[in-house]
Length: 192
Image 1: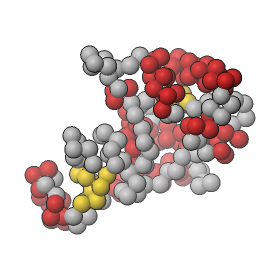
Image 2: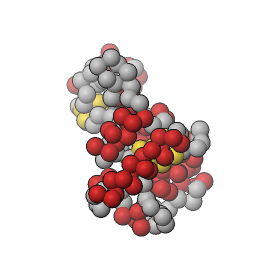
Image 3: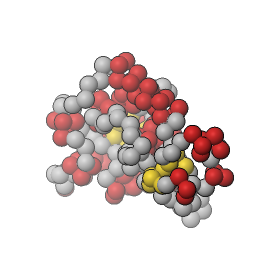
């Protein structure tokens, strides 16, 4: 999956994974066939700029549909996406752009994801773990700028102890919201 897209989907609250999250015992990331097996066994949608892996995922989907008629439904893709896709619907998408706005719009148009941001639903963009609201006295002041601690009263922390990254509603929140608005305006995206 593309790194920026991965982070944006996590920010929007989507549970995502990357080949980098699944190294073997030697630390080597999975190859295409292994990535597809991970997607199929965990019912994850595959998003990539690699046309070959997308083609392989489509072939695997067709093979699975012959033995398991409800295979696509297990991916938790909105019914609207499947009905309005015309031909066979696949749990994968080939991205062709390097622009995050274009990619997010394509994902929205294909899978009808929500393009709404809220810190309460966001996941850690670094590790995908859930964010937990914490009280200001429990914030490790060594891990955030002192001006942020003084100015803000609401904080969230990544629930993964190996990550533990802190978040607050600051200028990045405004940039995320503005970027999502630009994407919606640019592509005239209306919520379903």
